Structure formats: structure tokens, C-alpha cells
Image (cartoon, rainbow, N blue to C red; front, side):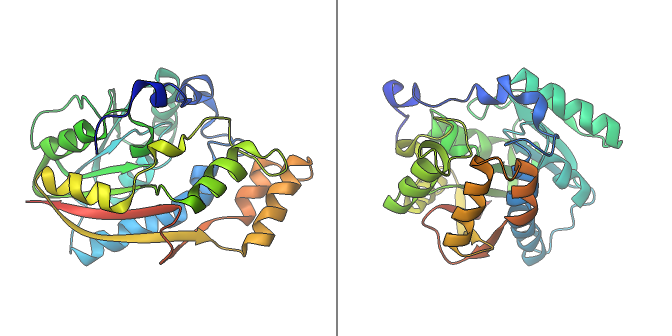
Length: 266
């Protein structure tokens, strides 16, 4: 897999993390859905990986690449890691720092991107990169940088969107484009930037990782009911907060849309 063509990359709206960066911790916002609907699956999977590998986070260092407003970063810190996060959007960084301070969490946030991680070689025992890989232009460089800052035998935990017909229908058409159900900003994701499991496995192998596994995800309710929930929001009957209370992802074998995985640096 190569660097994304500029014409394709120019379609994605990564500015949402700058323009809406102060809404991460407001329950009735699209960004807060990451906490209510995605984190239960994402954090649960990470905890399972750490347990499987017999890793005690206490005394270990962790980095989140693309930390946004700190929705996942704070969960990483609460696991026991000495935690850092990097994020290119100033507004999101501001929100993350303010919330961590209010919660009394000692998290180090730095401005930076996956292509240029502002930390020395072999700085971290664990790196998390979730809902980010499908947003970057130079994925090979990001994976290379993550490998560089990980210690030998360090763990890389990630999730991303698969490039399938189903993901195009759901993540692009239903989530973003079809007004009957759409709940995400236009162009938040670009389908051509989605990553097939085999592609990320190849990149990990090329950058000194031992890939271990992939897992899938699915809604906690059947698709017709999920569509009903989204329709309630577009009609004004539900808020984002209501959607977050009723919808969450759960682990499954279905990797057609959002999938996660982990690898070990050799």
C-alpha cells in the first residue's frame, strides 16, 4: 500500500477535529459518540489483548496516535499506563488537556501527527491508533513511525475501516450521505482511504512487526432497529445523546466495516 493520492486525500474533511474540537465531551455531539458507542468495544478489546499478553499497565508507557479530545486517551490512562497523546488539531488538544486537568489525570499531550511522532526511538511499551489510520495520507510512514517509537516486544493496538462494498454502503452512504439516516459530517471518511486487513498486515510485517490477530464489530441491535434509531435522530425525536444511550458496538467475527487488531514489535 502506498501514500494516498492528493486528489483522493483532498476529499476528506479532517478539519472537523479543529472546527468541532471543543465538543468532544458534550454528550449531545457526534464526537461524543466515540465514548458512548465505540469505546465499549474498543477499550474492551484492548483490555483483552493486554490480559492475553499478561501485560500489567502499571509502570508501562503508552502513546495514543491521533488522540483527539482524549476520549480514548483517558481510558488508556485509567488502565494504569503512563500516558501520552499526540494530535494535530489545536482545538482538540485544548479540549483534551482541559478535560484531563479537570479529571486529575496526568496525561502528556503534544501536537504531532502519525507521520512525524515527536518522541525518541523506543519510547513506549504500547501504542494505540484507533479511528485514525483511515484518515492519514501516508499510511506506510505512520506504521514506520509507530514501529520506531515502540520498544522491542512493544504492542501496537489499532482499529480501522475495511474497504468493502458493505463498508461503502454503511460507512459512506448511510452514515454520511443518505439524509434519511446520516449522522456524520459529509466527507468525514473517504472510502478509497479505507484499509483492507491484508494491506495492514503487509505493512506491519514490512516494519518489523509480528501480526497477531484481527477481530470484527457489529451493532448491539439488528440493522433494521439501528436504522430506526438513526431515523429518530434525523427527525429530531432523538439527540446524539439518546443515540449513544441505545447504540454501541460489540465484538463479532464480521470485519466488513470496523475491525481491530494487534501486533508485536520484533
